[in-house]
Structure formats: structure tokens, C-alpha cells
Image (tube, rainbow, N blue to C red; front, top):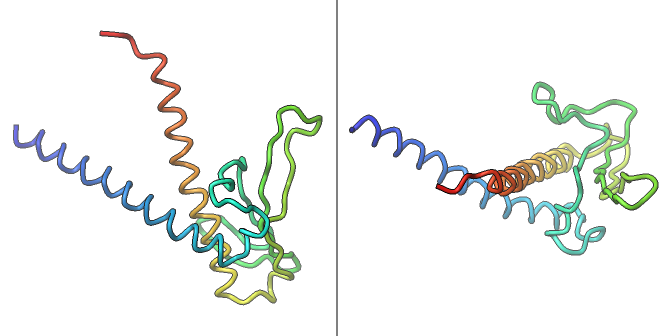
Amino acid sequence: MSLALERLKNLTNKISGYERARKDNLTLLQNLYDELGINQKVEEFSDIFNFKAINLSGASLLNESLGEIKKGKYLQILAIGYDKDAVVKSKNISLGYFGKAENVDVDLKNKIVEFIIRFRFEKSFMTLEHYYTMLESFKVDE
């Protein structure tokens, strides 16, 4: 019985750790949203989650080369909007243009990369909640 209780305790700690990380992430994400001037393009913070995705041009988002500048490219935060009723369903929207990637201050570039990773972290929780809710319809009443 103590093994089962230990596993339950570990699982509970892991879940509460994720929830704490999520809460902290949202606070830091909102700070970056303001600091990077994204609030000038998207008035309400919560509205950034209406985008399908947010990408970056001019720097890498790959784990093995995170933040590495792509020479000759421009550093830009791009949101992907989606309109199911439009002829062209998806649309790129610039949330921030920062000039030639190699000329952008390293601290600013790092904040931009951090913003996108933090956005994706929260978006993944939202996606998980969405599918969890959808699966509820498949539960068999006991």
C-alpha cells in the first residue's frame, strides 16, 4: 500500500508543479506581451490565444539552436490567424518587426524567443484542456 501512496504523492507533486509553472508562465508571458509592444497590435492579452500559432522569422526556435540568429533575415513575430469562412483560410499577421536579425540587441532577441516559447507552453495547456473536454463525450455512464 505504501508504494501506491508514494506513486500518488509523486503524481500529485508533478501535477501541482505543472499548474504552478503554468500560472508563473502566464504572468511572465503577459509582461513580455507589454514589454515587446504586442499590446499595440492585440489590445487584449487573452486575444493572443485566438491565433492558431505564433512563429518567429530571423531566429531559430529549434531546441538545439534556440535563439540562434539567421543571418540576412529580419527578426519578426508572426501570428497565424484563421478564418474558416474566408477564401484563404489562414493569414499571417505581424505582431512585431525588429529589423535585421544580426543587428537586434541580444537581450531583446532573447525576450522575443522567450515570448514565443511561453506562448506555446500556454497554448499546449489550452489544447490539452480542449481535447480532454472532447473526450468527455465518449465516457460511458457507469
